[in-house]
Length: 466
Image (cartoon, rainbow, N blue to C red; front, side, top):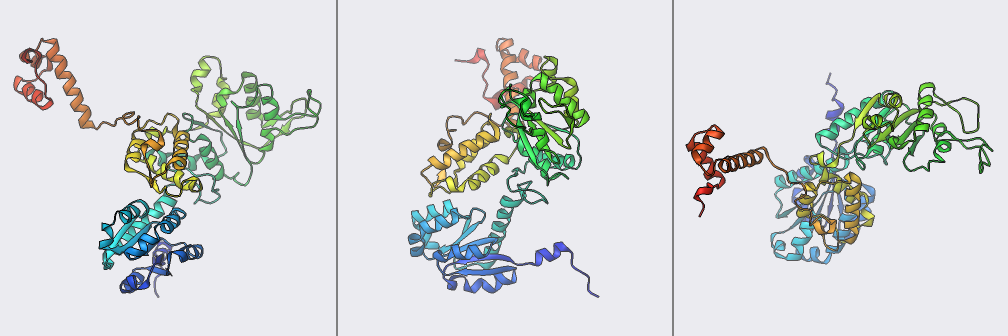
C-alpha cells in the first residue's frame, strides 16, 4: 500500500502558474522543460492581451518576450501593466543587442525584476523564475501578520521581518488567547492601534465589535458621556438616551488609546468598570453589565505620571496585566525598505504613471534616517513622494530627506573600536605634552605598540608637528 503524501508534499507538487506575454516562438524551445519543472503555462500573444489573462489567473511570475522593436513601441503599455500588478515579479526575454538601446535599458532597470537574453538558457531561466516567485511570495505574504491568519481582516496589516517584529507577532498571538487587559506602549506613530486590532482579530471576540477611543482627542466636558453614555434629560442638550463607547463594545474589544491623557476623575469611573464589569450612564442609577475586553495604549511613561500624581496607580495595575511594547522604526533593522515598498503598493492608485519604485540612494537614506515620527512619518513621506516624483524612481529629494543623509550613522564594532583607540591616543599625547614614552606608560602599552597605533590612525605627536 502506497504511503500517503503529506499536505506539504502535495502542495509542492502543484504547478506554479507562469504567464508568458509575446510571440510563442521565442519561448517554444523551453516549454517542455518549464512544464516538467512544475510551471503551468498561460499565454498572451500581445501586451494588450495581458490584462485579460491576468484577470483570469494569478501567476507566480510573468515573462515578457519581445524583440527590440516591440519593446520600444510597447514600453508605456508594459510600464502601465507592471505598475498595476505590483504583486508580480516580471522577467524580460530580449535580444542581447536590445540592451545597447538606452531607452530599453531604462525600461528594464525600472520596471522588471530581472532579464534574460535570447537565445534562452532554460536552466538559468528556471533559476530566475524561482527567485522571482519566491520574492513575490515574501513581499505579499510572509511580511504581513494579519491577512493570512484565520479571522484576520485585510485592514489589519503589520509589516516587518526584523527579529524585534517577529517577537511582537509572537507576543500578540500569546495575549490574544486570553481575556486579560493589555497595555500597549511605545512612541507615537509606532502602530499601537494596529497591534490592538491584531489582538482583537485573533481573540475569541473577533466576531464582536472593535471600538477605539482616543482619550486625548475627546473634549473634557464630553468624555464622560462618550465613554459611559447618558440618559435623556441628564444635562442640557441630552434630548435622547445615548449608548456610550464602552457599552457599544459589549461582546468585543474596547481600545483606549492615549490612556495617559484620561482625566483623573474619569480614571476613578474606569477603574470601577474594570473591577465590577458594570457601568452607569450619566444621569442614570441602573448598573449595566458590560462584557468587554479592554486594551489600552499610551506613549506616556505612566510610572512617571503616577509619581507626578497624574495617573492612578491602582488603574495602572488593572490595565497593565499584560504588556506589549511597540518598537520605534529606527530599531527595526531591515524593515524600512519593506514598509516603504508596502506603502508604495498599498497606495498605487495615487502614484504618477511613470513612478516604478525607489532609487538605491533613497533606500539608503531611508535606512539611515531616524524617523522621529515613526511609521506615520514614513507613510506620509512616501505618499507625498509618489505624487510629486516625475521620474521612474523616487529619490531622496522626493522624500525630503536629501539633507538628512547623516542623521543616523551606523557604526560597526570595528569602527567604534578604532574611534575609541584614536581618541585615547590623542588624549594621552595631549596630557603628556606629546611625549610618546609617557603617553605609552599612561596607556599601559609599549612605545613600539603606541608608534604602530599612531601610524595606523595617522596621528603625529604635537611636539613633532611642523
